[in-house]
Image (tube, rainbow, N blue to C red):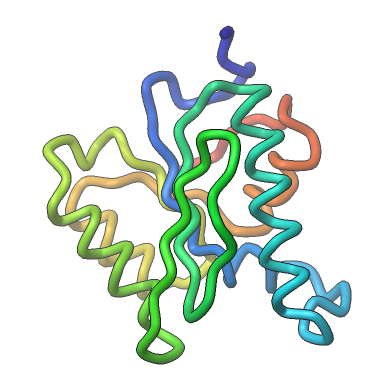
Length: 138
């Protein structure tokens, strides 16, 4: 399957899921469960279109992964997903192949220090809605 224009060839995505959900004030807080399910569905469509591996990391309960999307549920408080993302980057044999989608400056600094690349949550959400959106990393 061809990669989208502007994609990170050979890259794998770790998504700070609640950060991506919260990047747009669309009322998601009235139905957190529904917002989580909707994000996983959107990630599944994007994964099918791009072929790029993606893992969504959620604080607290998470829906099941579908269509090749891995989902991680992280109980333990509001920073549990951040800590799990850091743990995954730190334990990865090729951290430079990981792109972390987040707008959390602290998390972004932590994963960049270990060799991962980052993309802002709002830009990543736009990528999900229009897979041809160019990549910007930091």
